[in-house]
Length: 165
Ligand code: SF4
Ligand code: SF4
Image (cartoon, protein in one colour):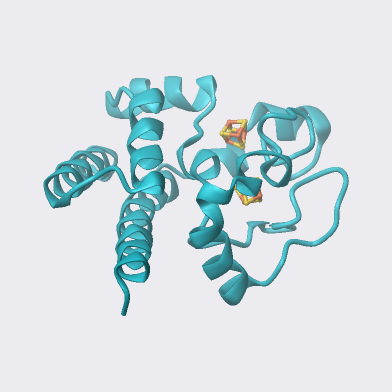
């Protein structure tokens, strides 16, 4: 395997490991389906995955960045291409997001103010979205070493521990 391929493989592995921990955090909290204000207001199951914020609509945003090609390519192999939709993200289904992994950084890390407040009140967790997003951005561009990944994973696991009690 050439150096470039090896590096991209390492990047993908680290990304998926960190994503998996953060996914578990939000799964344990399990807030959105029952409590999302946007879903209630619109009487749908589409919260912030809908076409309401141009910057957040995943397929109009960062997903098209060449930097994410390593992730998108692997995602399409597993989940296929997104459906063509106008009102919501093409990976959104009746039961929510079909991606169990390989989401874009914004989808992995985004947490609305209401959910942040809930995390603070219920679990005393302060969700530092900017910091967490920056860490994922470093992984995306390959600006990390083992020490960084282990530290970041430990920080995410600490949050997971706090929301699991
Ligand atoms: S993060 Fe907030 S806005 Fe998005 S689905 Fe969850 S509750 Fe709704
Ligand atoms: S990929 Fe999933 S989390 Fe991201 S916008 Fe689409 S449905 Fe939502």
